[in-house]
Length: 364
Image (cartoon, rainbow, N blue to C red; front, side, top):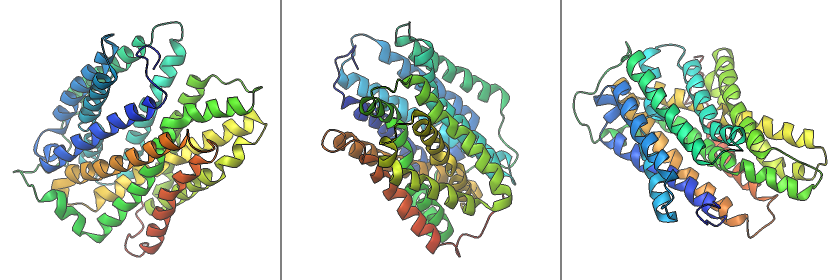
């Protein structure tokens, strides 16, 4: 932000550029049914290489806001071949126990999302460029591991031809629509929360001058603990049921949104940090469960396309919530704006409650 003389509002724009790139990428991947017609491991590898390249190019000192936005957009575009394709690979390997498998994938996503904050804290004495280079190097390494160590799964049913109708036909199933809507409601909250965790910590510091936080480290911990929440929820879903655990996680994160203004008033730093850690756990815990329901209620030959479609729409929703907070942080009391994130979970809870007879409990 300082190096390129960017305004504070650029944070939301840069985050949304990645989201928009991911949305367009997933849209194109879904329409062309790439994850179903081609080897998922090879798609993952190719996109990991290209995504890491555009991520690293941000270090060029001649960049402007426009060029950085473009690079962030391209990074997001090729993430479309990593996250949903990774879930497709898991679905190809697990006929049963998919919920637990996806919980580990989402857990890895969460830790990866949080890692730049940790890298910033660890490289505080170094230039910011090393954070980007480190994350890009890890992306290449991950792509190589997937390409060399993870062949196509035994339950893979490759699509034999281009099917442009798959993008729309998959939504004809009521169970699929219900699961997808729950995912959309969850996405309204999660990425906006992640994007503003450093802002939340800084706001508390301003309100309570005695509080001194290591913002990069705590941002990593608050976001990263969601990986533990995802895995824990995946295991609990095996006995309590996939839909039931998704409902519970969505309810708890909704409560966190609604009580967030109250937490800004506490003078207990431990209580405030404890609250954010809990929020970080439950805000993402339902994600693998909704993805499991989506995968289980989509035709096997277009599972990858179905997951990609839902990801595309879900991430489009994140742009709206991120930009809404980005605008409101300068025009209203910053301690109240996070209550608006409860809107998605509330609608999701209503939908899940009304549809509970449609989505039968899944113990996977």
